Length: 87
Length: 245
Image (tube, rainbow over all chains, first blue to last red):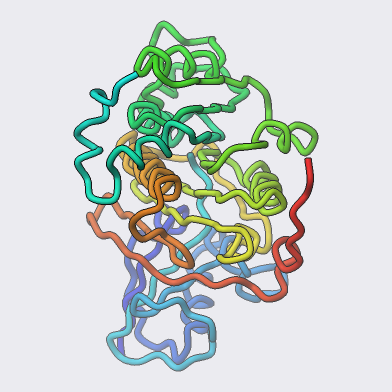
């Protein structure tokens, strides 16, 4: 199984714009796997309790993810939209 | 004053003399005269929006000039609000331009945006954005929100009580990167889209970015539009009360 992940904002600066994850069963697992790759990235994605921050928007196949525990399928595409602030 | 300046846009269906008169009677506040605020206010000015209030407390710096097209070398050290007012007046003498060189605060925000039809969020930080969000919600004024980072831009239109507000989207203050990377054309694109949303709101045509966010990726040239939802427990917009000024 492979899930393509596109990163945005500062996350894409530190981890690159795209990743392929081979084993996540859920969106939550995918995000935690990404967070494990980089300390700075983890601070953007997870709060002090290790939970996904409320201000992270995740799209799965172009749809906004509301249930982070929904099962992922082979070929799914995730977009991780960190808040950005520039103007 | 005739309409010759605007005749090409008045050829559009749903625009005409009636639409142009609506623009002439309209008042728009542009909060921030930087990368987003420059193109947004330029296009609102040349479209003939009757009154533009441009609010920014910063002064022009050399490092602004790759994107903040209202400001030129000769303006370095000048208040952006003053520089913006000069350029916008020169672009279209038929409209009223009011440059306000003050920081937006809880104390002055209501006064500065009182009576406007639309507010454009062209800011570069979330604390002031959250303040603007709250004030616009309380005053019942549509707010067009845009942000950029690097080659990416996002935009949505917030209608108080009808769409998600900024606090619905970002319940906790985001961690901010300063200074942030930016290529001038990206806020150029997004500022233009903000101006277009404002014009559509004022004239009353087309489809707005309500309950959805548009994301522009300048690296891949992809545009995504995805749905966004109000948070039932949003502490800012769940109990909307219009505040009398």
